[in-house]
Image 1 (tube, rainbow over the protein chains, first blue to last red):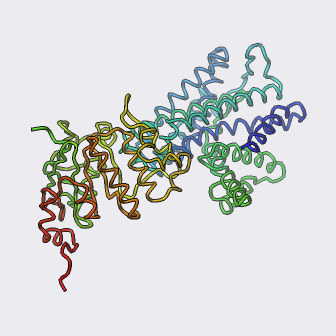
Image 2 (image 1 turned 135 degrees about the vertical axis):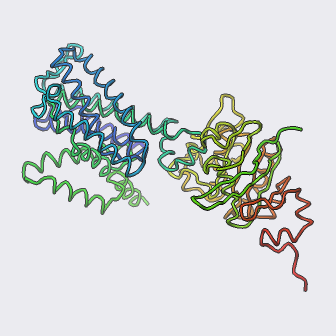
Image 3 (image 1 turned 60 degrees about the vertical axis):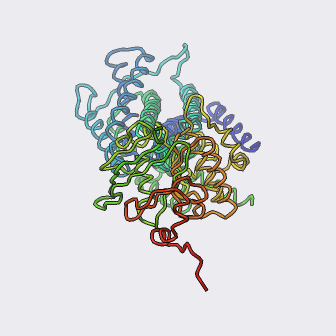
Length: 310
Length: 241
């Protein structure tokens, strides 16, 4: 327990110190990792704790990003109002999509989430009057909360780190709460949970909404980081990358999406420098992880450490 | 006459086209144990699953006290006061003992809390932080009973609680059932262990091919060895030498 606390403290200090010692490239890379962590952690609520695999989670990330960019650039709303509207809109969208997708389970659920996300992607591409189509929305400036400028990579990184910390803490509290336990119960034995008096559909629907909300938070971070939004963000590839992060890191664990998302983002950024078809490398790494550690990196490493200590 | 705790009246249930329950009628009196016996495959577990709402009755009626429940969903039936101890325990293996209990917690001023369940089964308290999947069969059975009690039911459905357990643990489960009955719990007990069922039950119903073929007191069953041999497939008499 003491060693774990020590590791956490060292990691936290390293993350805080990073922008003061690293160059802009690495600070920006770390920011991208943190955004991917929030996105994968939100998806992990569904995949890992509710047992519902979704291929449409990017819809919420992109929807929040579009609302934020659209209301700020087109309507000229202040950043705080835009952020609140984006999160409220995304949560509402998650409630609607959840109500539709949860009519099925398993493969059916997966395909419905994919189909719904493709609808949002299609709208972003084709509704040019609203979304500016393939050109995307530009002209967004980063907010200045409490008079602090987030324009520099270091300042934006620290703000993202703070929000990621809040997101992971809230998600950790959620999955450890009575609700989180009942969510895991619906994942393992839904019929049994119903026989214990739980409304399984409601538990899952709530999880879908919560996951959508945090994906919306990731979307806000993303759009303020890029200062630009394009329909490709809503594509299946973004959803699949998030899912890859969850599965590679270890679904149903708090640290899994952190490790998995970091791996995906770092591989994507580094590999694309050297290899044109970096997707192939990402796929090969994923296959290797599945072969060596079928439960993901975090549970796999834990098992190795437990074996070593025995 | 006082209303029975649980009443099944001419209940029919199907698995696909297979007509499993063919007009089952039985009643669990308040604060008593009704033993439901029969060979494998006669519909005992289906009967319990139908009461719990996990299999939908296609005919007949089920009453919990005065409330008709056969059309309700299983979560509503559970909230109405039916607790289920399923066959094979079915605890949540990836949750701890305490989490398995807390997930079933219900009621504002409940008779059963995690603490009172731990008083009933002190062994669970010792293992409260352990994952339920790592418990022994007996401990899992205690957890399954504790989990059902956490919903503070008025009627407890117990499906083969002695299955696969060591004799000492069976005796402990038996003592628990008696204690619960003495505290006023109404229990529908499905058992393959005839001796245990006859020891614990106040009334016996025997099922055969989806129907109730006998209903009576424990002594009536004991006094009719042919009944046991015919419908339960066990020799009630010692072989003569």
